[in-house]
Image (tube, one colour):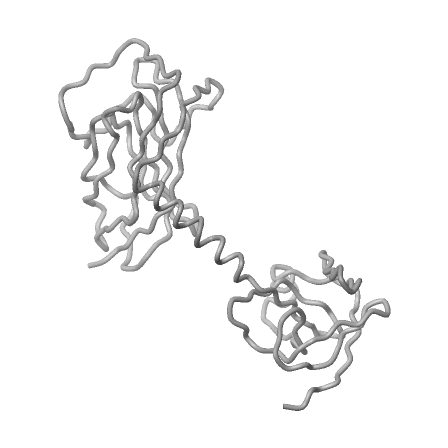
Length: 266
């Protein structure tokens, strides 16, 4: 395929600066959010792409320094960084390779799953300055908490120095569509020196769909009620586990967060 020899001149615009240190090329550009604000209904033209490409389109000049641009084409393992203005409603899209980032995320995800599979152990550091929350007052044992093994009594004060917290990982949470009442086990291992409070939120919006009261060590919740029913689908979800000393003082300890997927089916 013959190479095109179009020449574009970068213009000033946008809040960010794109630099190529090797060649000294520098140009200002608009972020994707800024483009959405400028063109809420679309109407701009992408003339070429910079950074990645197969077929040469020409070059873009900025302060006398030229850089090769390519014909616009969706590239695998790539993402849009921003848009360089080159004329009225004309832009060159900056495309970057994200395969290394994907590999890093994949490695981190595998490490996280492995850690959750064997339980998360982390030293407790009491923090008396953590503010009280009003979502569900601590001090109330959840009515759905079921005894796991033996009976429990609440001491006046417990020493947490050097103690660890164990949290069982949740790889996937399967729930029923269109129902508030759900069945799923949320547990607090019996060796823990603290209460658990589970807070489940949708990652996309931050909407909290369930907040438990306190779950004593050695107990679990196997049924609970959502704030609202969910439609069929898969939801990226963040589960926060708030912890409080298993005594009458109920001092706030470390909080833990884990990411999982809620799968909702009929």
